[in-house]
Length: 514
Ligand code: NAD
Image 1: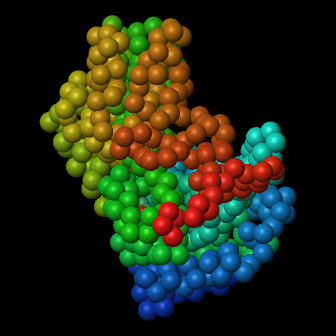
Image 2: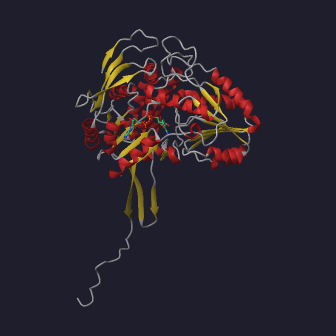
Image 3: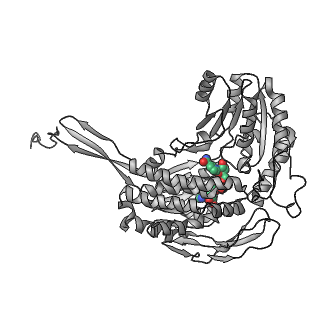
């Protein structure tokens, strides 16, 4: 990578930013074979600060070749879990030690508020520690059939895992896939999102310093339709773990069919936050605000549809909107900022379009476009004021479609049955949040929700052991804890005969007339 020093600007620019971002293949930083690049911009100034190597099929071939060689002939898959765990813990130490740097780069590249980017680096480190612990503690089933058989499970890494990630929390989401894939002895090719390639290249040095053998981790930057597509179609990549939009997931599903790959799909969401009249209203409002406006609303599990029982509907809307109007929108690097800049002008245009659609579909209570009174120089950045629409009908586009920005639809309900029907009335099924003091209702309502994850009286706070994933158009398969170990390993069953086996003797009886 090549670096430059900080420039004077209207907003914070980290020191020593790279001006060119490369691939990392077989322990070396390299450009694309054909020299192709793409521009990378920061979402506050919307100017290009770097070029990145744009991987093509031949670059993916090289990366997969290196990963395959490291899998077949390298030490990594054969190492004892404890040896791998030591390296994973060193990686976690390094991520923690670089937390401030990681956070400022992530903030600069994504537009996420710095206070929220800091949590991402620590969570990334925790993912490595967690899977280091898990593979050391891992044991598998052995089954005995008295006097006749012992069966045991021989758990094996699968091979080269293709990891394809989105831009919303890049480094953390990469760790989510890298940690279990590596812990279980696979080798990997990571294809990060093209909007935000900056932090991914930090993995290379972190892994090298921690002692990960060359070829085990490979990184190819590039566009989804080029580098991502080549990775999905590569015959030597038996696994694809993908996080991104539902429509991209569908394309990948089709493209992976020819080689029958293992697929893990973490896709989009339009999650309901259901507030009953008996809820602790202040806590529900705090949580619902954070649930939809944190990470700039660019959050797969955002509670972007708030369903409120009629008896408290007006009070909820009034208090919620007043707080939304008060949210601090600004330079992502400023610790006071609560909502930063959306990741890219293209995404800004998409969210801004939904805001305009919302004005025809709901009652605008807060926001509705660019925030007012932004500091000079930030007027053209990708800022959208936290936007609240009330009285949104269930067939409205802003009720049904994932916006992935700081925009929320509020809808009233009369009773529990209607709340459930509204909650389940989208094609998505990722998360759901329920606010009620009635425990019986909370549990029964959860059971009937079409959602992969439910939080009762809370926003998204997740123990790493629990399954993560969605149903319906929100995903296929669950990762998290042992489910990630299962995805990245094959469970070979070995059957040992202890006694005499009853074997029908084919061909033993002479044929009649022979
Ligand atoms: P995206 O689908 O546009 O891109 C995700 C990744 O896929 C990128 O790396 C992209 O380059 C790659 N890609 C695009 N087309 C491809 C193709 N044809 N073949 C292979 N790879 C391809 O998603 P995004 O805009 O980066 O991220 C936002 C989406 O991600 C939202 O829908 C959000 O809900 C979802 N998301 C889901 C989760 C979850 O865990 N369920 C978490 C975070 C984000």
